[in-house]
Length: 284
Image 1 (cartoon, one colour):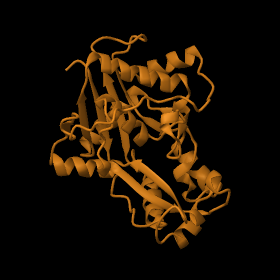
Image 2 (cartoon, rainbow, N blue to C red; image 1 turned 45 degrees about the horizontal axis):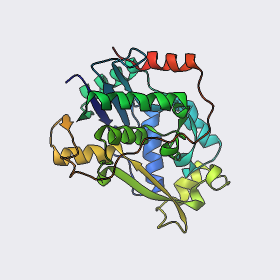
Image 3 (spheres, rainbow, N blue to C red; image 1 turned 135 degrees about the vertical axis):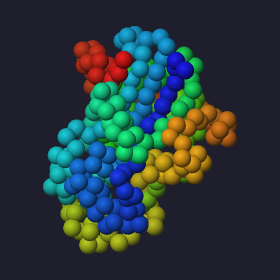
Image 4 (cartoon, rainbow, N blue to C red; image 1 turned 90 degrees about the vertical axis):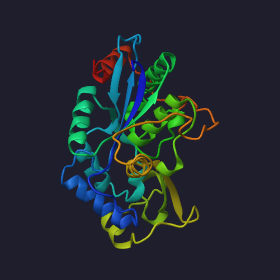
């Protein structure tokens, strides 16, 4: 197949503890301390075309990541944002193609990789390339985090970005609801710009025994989740590492997948920056 889209799914090294904020924080910190390649899991996207785009690129593999992961983790601890880290605007970047391929090889060897293949037309592959180019031109790649509205071009984490391109490849909003993780972060434990308060890590550990019940005392955090995606794939396609999904396989969802409306107002990137990004993303 000369043109296609792939969503590569890497789960965390062990299940995260979503039973409570305390459990999630402790498990996440542990995965960072052991320096796992994907401490909370990761989505990579792959776009391939039989004809090159205007940058001479036929295939890219990338995803959204934080700049300086360890340093940014320490920063949110020092700033005392607590569960505000869900909504934090981290300095972001697009993964380099060679680094993404290397991590995918590692994940496959470790038994931590499942890939979703979406067959596309040549025109659809180039539409995906164009969407990625707009993501670069409009500066979305510089903003990583779960608090961004991706449809407005504010940026995204790897999960939201992967979900957007998956749906765009399908042509419809077909991502299963079972892939989405939703919790209400207690306002009392959420610091940073959402509440304007300071919340230390030890307060989350001490008081974070349960999630909030709703919007009265909590802030909704909803995101595609690598563990849930992996679990869904394993239930529906047990033991398969490569799964082909089409609108028909997903029940023919009717809602068309929208493109991003870049309304965030970030500065446009210089032409040389755009060229450099494409040179970093391509893998052949």
